[in-house]
Image (cartoon, rainbow, N blue to C red; front, side, top):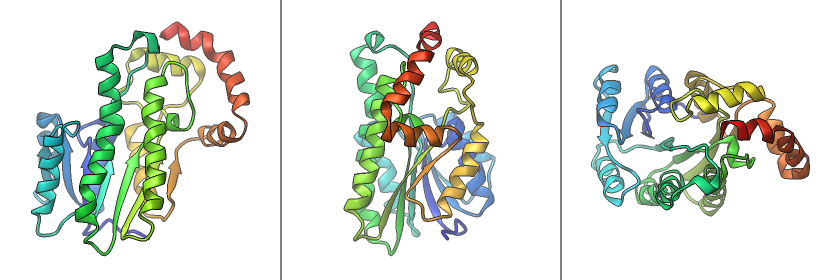
Length: 261
């Protein structure tokens, strides 16, 4: 059982919906947090709601400079962090044909490339510890390709595969790599079209607080992978074994989905 009390944890995307809820919950269980986000005002507002034991680093982790700023801060700490939780990410519900080159590059960079680079940059620090953990927060759509989310799915499929491969690569090291996949969540990443579509399809949406509670429970056990929600967990398994069945399900829903695209 992994206890969060007296642990120091780096939390990316800390000012966002899920990130903020996770930060608030980890604060209550006694963890010391290194909170990082690109939005400095929201980050400071979050930190001011806590006592003075936490740290904040305003940084754009999609840039090498931003990642270096965060890693340097952690390296200089008297008690370096033992865990990195990667929550930072963006979303776009759109047809592939409607993406610009800039939008494509940004989404893949924020959701995948920068997260891979950040894990790499933390390895020298984590490798010196007796035990450390990297938790990459992906999505159910990292296991199920959904119409309207082709690029987002590509980024999350990539993050899931990266987490699995890196975890196996580091099995003989003190660094553990784990992957946690929420389902649709009520955050500002989803605009009104997405909320209306999910309602029309009968898809459940969790609150950030529900996701945070499940994530913290996941941190306390030794599972390598965690998937949130039912029947989403079942669909992940079906899609891996019998993808044609999921094809047929989406074919029936395609008219509704395209109504909101």
